[in-house]
Length: 223
Image 1 (cartoon, rainbow, N blue to C red):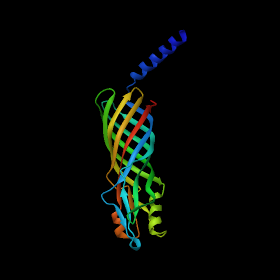
Image 2 (image 1 turned 90 degrees about the vertical axis):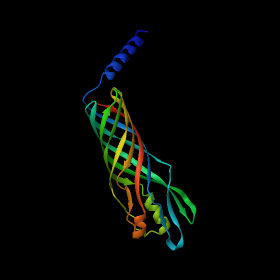
Image 3 (image 1 turned 135 degrees about the vertical axis):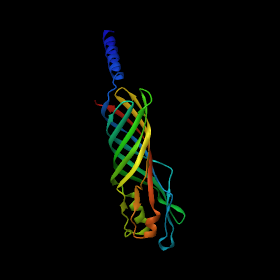
Image 4 (image 1 turned 90 degrees about the horizontal axis):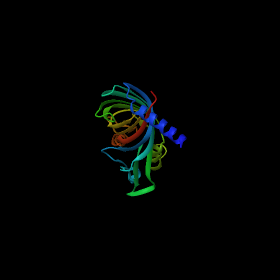
């Protein structure tokens, strides 16, 4: 019984100290998940040898990891820059001659280095809202989009991807519980994140896609 009392007392002290944690500067780590998609106003249609080849946007989202470090300057009004590794992508339906091909859906994924800079306002001690610009550098991709081009147009399709650096924004809400924090955000792009440099200029102009995602992360302030 004595040990239980001591443990409860230590837990109460720890909770009280955490609840009083409210500095003007925070540095911490965070990790969570993205639900992302790639969409655009135009679907891509090719007609090699009279056969129709269509990419169609799919409403299903790709699940990916997001994590890194954050800094926060200020309390009621604050600035929060972050450095994140973020997996993003989307899914496409692939059709040939009006029928879904053997793969059906192409799951495109990219690994990105993101730098959002958020400007926030704390409505209450535990609740805040924030919005700000973001730059995203594509580090690598899984190649499935290029492979799909080659499957239907031949190995000499000469598909490469431009726009490694994209610009966008993030907006959302956050909850602080002492050193712990929960953030839920929406991310959109101002610039295209996938742009095909195809050997046919007309085809290349048809394929320009922007991304968007929903992100949820848990953070811990180290100091």
